[in-house]
Amino acid sequence: MAETPAGTSPALTERQRQIAAAARALLDAEGPEGLTMRRVADALGIKAPSLYKHVPDKTALELLVVAEGFVEVAEALEAATVSAPDPLAALAKAYRDYAIAHPHLYRLMNYQPLRRDLLPDGVEERAAMPLLKAVGHDGDRARALWAFAHGMVSLEIDGRFPPDADLPAAWAAGLRTFVQELRS
Amino acid sequence: MAETPAGTSPALTERQRQIAAAARALLDAEGPEGLTMRRVADALGIKAPSLYKHVPDKTALELLVVAEGFVEVAEALEAATVSAPDPLAALAKAYRDYAIAHPHLYRLMNYQPLRRDLLPDGVEERAAMPLLKAVGHDGDRARALWAFAHGMVSLEIDGRFPPDADLPAAWAAGLRTFVQELRS
DNA sequence: ATTGACAGGCTAACGTTGTTAGCCTACGGT
DNA sequence: ACCGTAGGCTAACAACGTTAGCCTGTCAAT
Image (tube, rainbow over all chains, first blue to last red; front, side, top):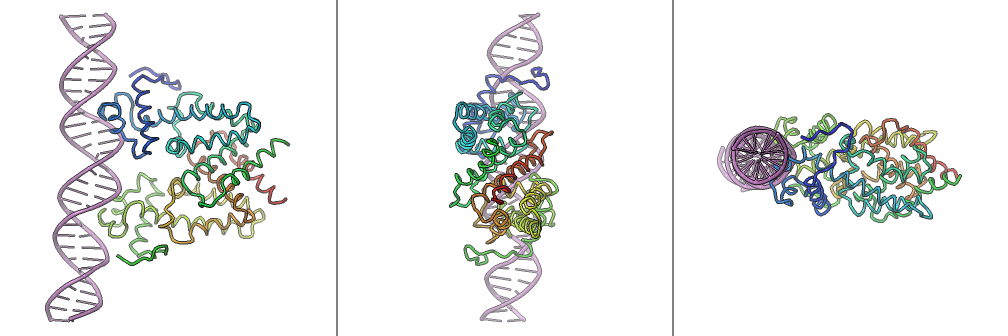
């Protein structure tokens, strides 16, 4: 058991990175049903119980994947907002694009309480930065925008909108306010 | 096997209503982990396999509960918006109140694709009506508002906002736009 | 009055899941 | 030369959803 001071990033071993990669691949390819201990172990050529030598339990394994997802999202949002004519629209588009591209991962990341204590430090903040910046460092409005985007994306991913819904129009309707208020 | 014309509400049997009630109670009290076939059967004094004489599988059982939830939400929203000075704020508050009061049910209803074909007719539409009315029968804005509310509520339920976040202020920031636009 | 269908319970069992216990082996440091 | 530890393994458990097959009571039709 490596000594890991509470509140510090654990620094993954090679095996843990392999596990995370295998899990990620399975999740992307087959969804949450495909993400089982035995399947992950199979992908690495070992048996399921051996995973527990590297990871305390399944939720910790999932967290490895989630952490990876947060970094990716952060990178995508940063890349999208840097020098964009309309940063807010670009941000929204990038957020949605990522979710649509990786719906299973998006659910794993956002459809449940987040074990922040087990997440590497700063990961979440980094992902939130582009949002805060785009919205003028107003926490309340940032949270409102996040909620709107998350709501739109999750409802779309889960097919909850009627098939004839004009989602771009709905996005526009929702974003209008934020843009407006920024200009005032 | 009762003949149930496709697309028509099945009309529950007494036993099915009992099953739904037991499931609902378990879900409210213990969350999704508590909602198992055996636990539901126990609550009714029967064995798990007997449930399958009344319900095809677990997701159908869950759908009984979900349908009940939709009716309750619809009633709550209708009651809240009737003769409210600020219908939109009242609607938002009622929506949140329901979700906060029944978080497990809210997740079951809204965190996954919805099997509309197995849901009694009109249930979903009825729940959507107060929203549409409050927003001036503009579908795009209605969906944007729904997404915002769902995002706020689900992120709150899952503890995703920082503990010091001022959620009422975030709600206000998000709702401002809708109110504004209505007045114009 | 007898029959027979069927509704609705039961037990036994299967396959899959996460997880634990306990064993074995190879390697690296004292 | 030792020995601890990292990291595999097999066997097994409990809980889950679900199926097969049986049995009994009720009730309608002959």
